[in-house]
Image (cartoon, rainbow, N blue to C red; front, side, top):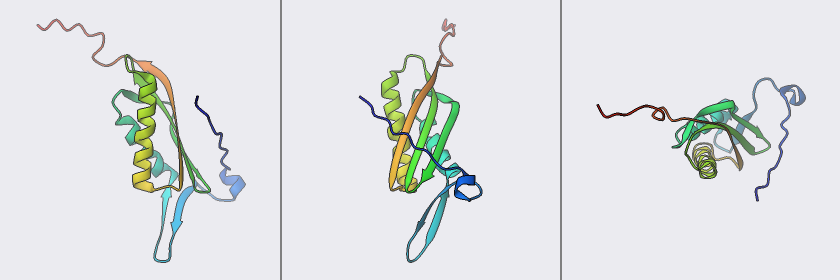
Length: 130
C-alpha cells in the first residue's frame, strides 16, 4: 500500500522572495545554488529517457524545494502495452537517481502520475514486408 505526503510550498509572496525557490548550499569554502527549473530539467531528462515513456503530459515535470526537501511531481504518458506499475517505479527510480547524483538533496520525494496511455508510433502500421 502506498502512502502519500502532501507538501505545501509557500509562494514567492508569502516568503517575500522574488522568483522561483532555489536549493542553496553553503560551506566554509564555497556556496552554490540550483534553481527549481534546473532540477526540473534533470528530472525531465531522466523521466523521458525511461523506456516506455511516450512524453510529458498535463502539468509535466514540477520540482519544488523547501527546507531541504526536493519534491518532484512527474506527469507522463506511457506507451500502450507497457506494464504501468513497473514503468512508474522505474521512472521514480531514474528521476531519484539523477537528482541525487547531480544535486545531492538532503531529502527527496518523487511522485509519478501516468496521465495517459498512447499507441507506439509503430503500432497500427500495416507492415506487409513489401
